Image 1 (spheres, rainbow, N blue to C red):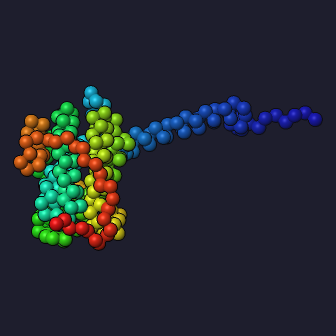
Image 2 (image 1 turned 90 degrees about the vertical axis):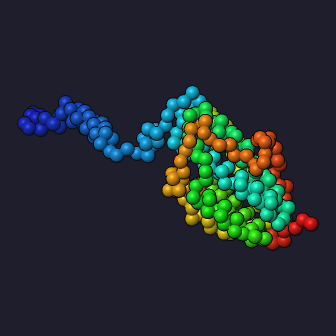
Length: 266
């Protein structure tokens, strides 16, 4: 029997036709993703890259700049809060926590002013509206009520910023910001420990507050309302009456007093 001749009109199924079809499909598969990418909205990663600037110390991201600002803001209200606790705390543990805050933020403020000056960043000279409100709350409290408010407000604030420090330390490509994050990590952890050592921290309330807060550090519209100033106009944060910045060398609290039973000093 003689073989059947090929059917006219079915060349697409021939060897050459199959190859041409495969090649055409490959070209379409390559072009469609490229067209889609070119016409899609910018992704968060793209925006992050666009807001990163080059410096001699490495790329400086928007998160890095936000972190430097928040280190400065923390000192602007936590150092005064520490001085207040040294004077108004009814227990030695509260007064010790206050002293750690004063020493720690005196040290960190000197560091953050140096970093900002070398990177050409502006810094605020006053706390945010929220931070001023916290100070007003502490100013209005007395006795054991003051101790509890001080311990819980400051512990909540430090818990929020602690996660920000970790995020910056893990992601920054800037050597100055990386070193500042190391110092901030040590200082913030020390403050967390001494605040917990007062025996006044309500851990259940703290967990609820941290769980309902999406921002790793106190922030919001009030932050943007605080004007920034150039490196030459930044006012150093120092303890009242202190001639200069002491070396930060206070050890963390070794242990906490029993909850609900703080010891008053004579």
